[in-house]
Image 1: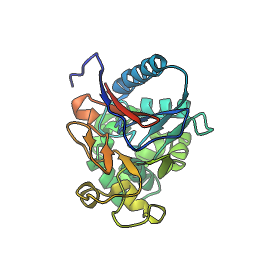
Image 2 (image 1 turned 90 degrees about the vertical axis):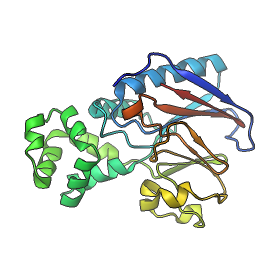
Image 3 (image 1 turned 45 degrees about the horizontal axis):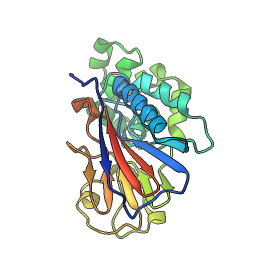
Image 4 (image 1 turned 135 degrees about the vertical axis):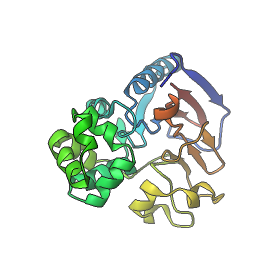
Amino acid sequence: MAVTDFLTFWRRPRHCFAVPEQQRWYAIGDIHGCYAELNRLIKSIDDDDTRRGAADTRLLFVGDYIDRGPGSREVIELMMRLDIGQERVVFLMGNHEETLLSAADGNRRAAALFHKMGGRETLLSYGVLAQDYDNADPAGIIDMIRAAIPADHLQWMRKLRLVHEVGDYLFVHAGVRPGIALDSQLPSDLRWIRKEFLESPVNHGRMIVHGHSVSEQIDERANRIGIDTGAYATGKLTAIGLEGSERWFLQS
């Protein structure tokens, strides 16, 4: 997969939605094992943060760290190193992490889904041989997950959050169900919803920043902002920057 070695940068005009004063947030979209792209984007974020001057800078990841791309293990290891606590770096759970964990718990249907969702690349990154994986049934995939993925990696994934609210923004992996109070959303919707959320013009009470649904470009609407630009297929991993009422984007 060809990727660019440079980063593009957009600015957006000031907006009515805002984050708390003195805070500067960078939220990164679905990584899907794209370790090289992630490193380039983090370097771009560091450079951008320095250029903008001193602030209380924080990071957020919207989930789907694994599957499809070649570097799932490296991505998880980097996430764990970045997990310094104290709300400095926030990690959400994606539907891909949920599926992996369900398979690790012995759910054969989840193991079959894990395979369909790009789990082969994840297990190969953890040292499973391609021939062994290709000859495995769902029960065999479960055994491979349990044998290959370190317990502390699975434990870290189990602690991932569903949502995170920052000022007028709500960060979530997939979206929210329109017409349902934000504090009454089902976890399954927060990690899996698509059409009902994507097609709704409803004001959700917060600007929803989400991943999960791939768009060729940043999907910026009146009530939501989609930042999953399909890094595993396009080489474009996207981050949104927020400070005060300003909003801008970075990409690998």
